[in-house]
Image 1 (cartoon, rainbow, N blue to C red):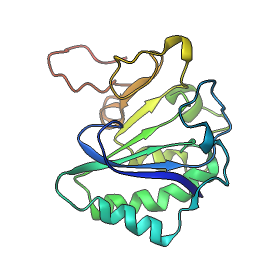
Image 2: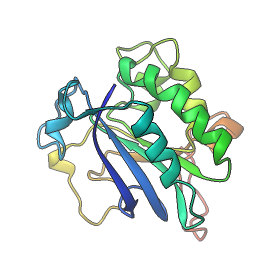
Image 3: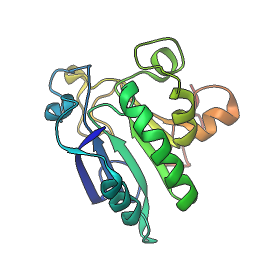
Image 4: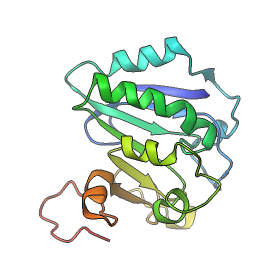
Length: 182
């Protein structure tokens, strides 16, 4: 797997200060994608041991809340196979840190049901992620007031709460909102 970019001390792609890993490779090709250069699986640098160690080391400070995965598309099968062992390392080294993942796939219809995104490690990868931002970017629904996503069709799913409830639970960082299930 290649990666397009690593952002250290990122505050735009999840709660708190995070390290964000932008993987290369995406077959979706959403119109007006903010990172179209990363559609090419060969773009960027190899996500080799040195790159993995750099990301793992960047997560060590207490002020880093966690890791965010973006793309490209983390849920391309090739990327999932490379990310799952790495995410296990993150969980072992930093069990208190959160893992966010951005995908153009829709959770229920493309990640849980048969689709081009599903492979032998999809369920394992989903099990390692705390928060999933799902859905393709749609220019007609672009809204700069939305937190942590670009278009209104995209959802922020609390995967830990979803697993516990047995149905999709939307992430909510404002406890005054009582009904945040779907």
